[in-house]
Image (tube, rainbow, N blue to C red):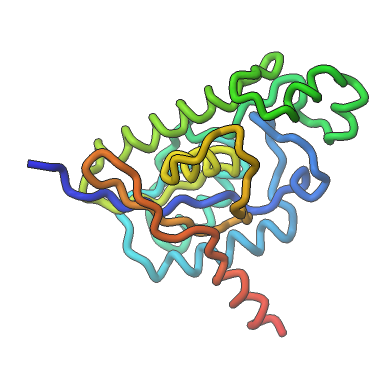
Length: 212
């Protein structure tokens, strides 16, 4: 008998200081900026009206800040899941693309080639991130079959889940959005992932309307 479907609400953290500066964050922490805090509050208000069974978050600060805004409104405890971390960006972490290009021109060129197996020094390859991310979400879906999971994670992790659900090659340029605090919905059914909706930021649009 097949396992019951698992519903996944996959969320990107709010905007950070380094997001606004275009810096590679990786496993380093950068706090939510004022915009990111407002995004997280709007997200928390939105999810307070939804039913979900578990709230999980990456252990990085920007994700936990965002998850805390949800937990304050929904009453859920936050389950910390380190496998939901962003791609480890190694020697690029904390730098802007221009700074990386200047300091590590050869490594930057290899990174921009989109080779899925290129490992950033002291970091991860895209394929390693893909395998980690898909394995994490699939294990969670199987362990909590039949439930609805809200997970707060990172743009790189979400990109890997989208590519997996759409069977999109890793070396294909991204043509889908990764908005801060976007609500992305997927269904795990009979061992496969189905994409239901992507890039939903209606709560941010509503907050903007309310402020006018």
